[in-house]
Image 1: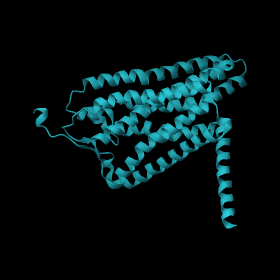
Image 2: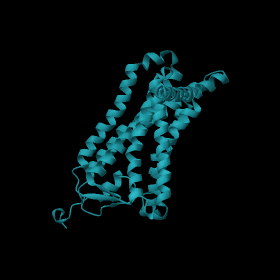
Image 3: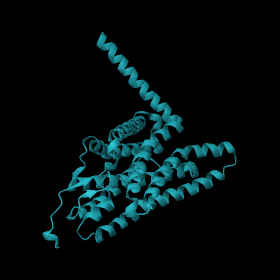
Image 4: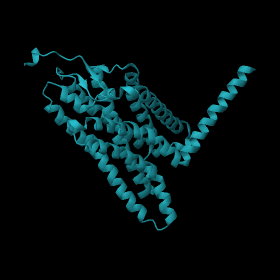
Length: 321
């Protein structure tokens, strides 16, 4: 049948977790609790970095960017999931679906870039401590963070402009809880060869280099740590990058599990649930990792909470007076 004789799809239906309709309420409250914890943890980290002078260093500047990114990422995913679970309505317009994919993909690429930059920052701090603050000055930090954000959003904007030109005229059901890249291409009845090539190019530019930078940085970090003569010195050096190393391991580990799974029809449910790994685990775990393993962050959070409590107490006293 010719394309012009086919009906054009105006909306998609995300099936989500429809096969578990008996436990929809349980899933709703589970994801609600996860979302609240993610937002609370990451917002507290951002506030701690902004309002505490002791955290105005390159490492915590990038950490604040990472926490802000994960709060944005979660805010674009979880409200939609919660709404779908509560109402049972998984319909989404084609444009809204493409925009959801665009923001999620851009933020995911930005996270890869930020993790690469943070790895390089730790490499400089351990391997070249004498030149660290001259190399990672305020201007350099702002430029690196801005490059991470802008390159990802601009790159995905080019891909989005092509995807907005696609025509969807086949089935409109997506067996997923978010609008994902490959299911969208599969449902299109337009030629997607150019988009697929551009997608590979973007991966090679935005995903692969940060991963290689992260891997290379930690190879040099490990070599530098092993050269430190004292055990105390090695432990102190490793403690400065251990939190970030755990975060990197969780992020790339969850991504690898998702993309290394077989893509056959029988593995769709497994792929859908494995996608929760990189959507939920990194933003949920990162605030706990940095707050539990870092005394400076712990002290900053205590000071912020203490200041907030004292302000509320003072306000109540003034009201009573």
